[in-house]
Length: 437
Ligand code: NAD
Image 1 (cartoon, helix red, strand yellow):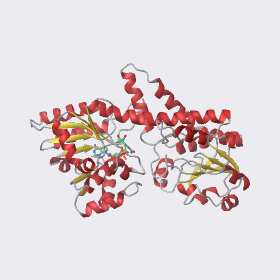
Image 2: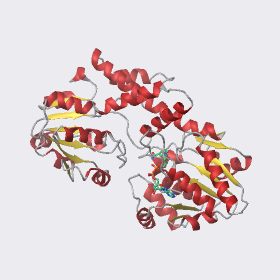
Image 3: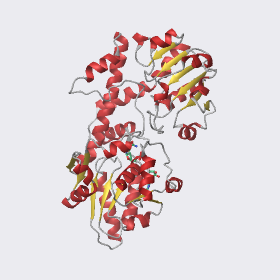
Image 4: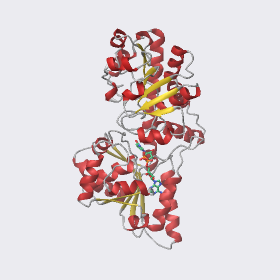
């Protein structure tokens, strides 16, 4: 249930290991596209699997929730759980899915919560389903499980098929054995499967995302200190990351984390902690550092120009990271809004996120959507690189120099070489390396 980034990847990959899967969604447009093997978002390698599995009739798509649920042995809920205004996770989609399950199933089944849900939700879902079945005066054994997802957008298929580990919270041996059947290829290939109780599985997902967000905010603070003491944060990162106890991943400083998961999951776990009387001070700091970090590129812009009223800025990259079209909570949105509020204009380009960006930004008259990266820089007062797309790494500086009105580059991802740019006559600002500016 839910054919988004998680549900669709899960459905397609399970169909690819020969299970019979129907991806069901309430979004008719999405399902109509999928029926034509068109993936409604950008995710490398996914379309191929969808084509392959639908041709073999292992994978189907439907908006008919009743029909899809009636005879299902296993129902995986992968619907969205966005943030509410107060920071809590909004679980209404999950409960709507549970109500459909209670209303429509016609046999025993295992219900798997793959959506990221606040601690305790999985057991509430079980009660909800059972109450509805009771009202129908039916008796089905409904097992419940928590199987949180750890895939990364942009690498989702590979993450799903070659997981670092699979986390499964169950209550019964029967549920555990069902998972061992579903994930048999993973068992055979010796990917670690950690069975635990449901609450611990729910908590594992939040703890993992909170830890990763903490590493990012920690490195951003280290980077800001490096800037003050004139140390090179890239060397510091490599030095720190070579320690086996620390590891080299997720140590890059930049303009803050975004996306559909870290911001909302950090907020949600803070809220859960509050509910139990525990102020999670560390994560509050992680959040506030991230908020400040998202303003950093704009601050550098203002330091350089003093006033940007009437000026035009080329923005390269809108997605919250490379290899995805997801712009949820992306630093680009914060930056564009700040430039607009200060009276500036933006010309924007992203290799894959333009449709999402147009939906989100079409009401902002100060934004111009461009077809190519070079279209954005024509007559712009500066270029700002916001997403680390590979195509922004190697540049034709001669063309950029000809097109840009003022030769200033703000590199929010530290992709470019300052010396080379200076030699070419550009003023260069990296995000966190004042000593190199
Ligand atoms: P998404 O917004 O891309 O997709 C959710 C889909 O659910 C939508 O297509 C929506 O139409 C559908 N939906 C909503 N209510 C429904 C219902 N009652 N019945 C059927 N379909 C319904 O969301 P996503 O990014 O795939 O995330 C799904 C969940 O997985 C979230 O809880 C998220 O936190 C978690 N998660 C996401 C990622 C990620 O990288 N995107 C990674 C790990 C975990």
